[in-house]
Image 1 (cartoon, rainbow, N blue to C red):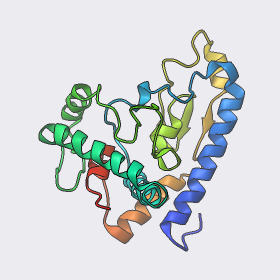
Image 2 (cartoon, rainbow, N blue to C red):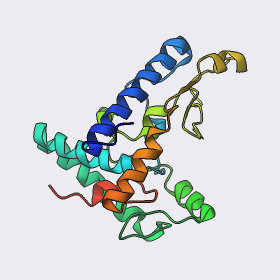
Image 3 (cartoon, rainbow, N blue to C red):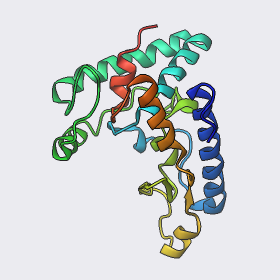
Image 4 (cartoon, one colour):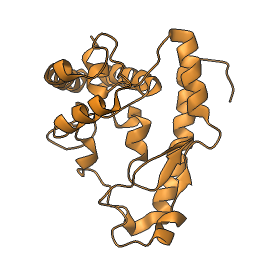
Length: 208
């Protein structure tokens, strides 16, 4: 990985690599994949995202505000409403948005708010308003993939009736060189940002 230049550029290169690997997985999976615009079960409930994901989301809402300010404001309004709903139950530091290491508390929190839609999900079209800047977990959910040491769960709507061997043939490693970990380490060194957070907190803090 080239460590020179803005971290946003390095993240962009990582995302292009990941999206290319996912395109290969989708092509191999064919009809086994149920994912399509308007299919949104994976857009419900909070989940962990990295500080690199958070940086990308902030960049995305800024870009969206330039091209469609009303749409961007709607995203932020939904984010603030979701964070107000979740704030008192948040298992972590409410000022930094960093989740604690208490796995039981996290599980309770994620279960309680499982029905709450992601703020980036447009309630009318049921599509993502920040799709190009979405977290890696959002990109990876669906086909059988891993990113570094993390293996993502296959969507329950995909690969219905497929054998283990058929699923295995569609598997890809999105980040075989571990670039995401390198970028997260670099981000911590350069900005101090560290720890896992959630989308509603990230977007609720933004003022445009």
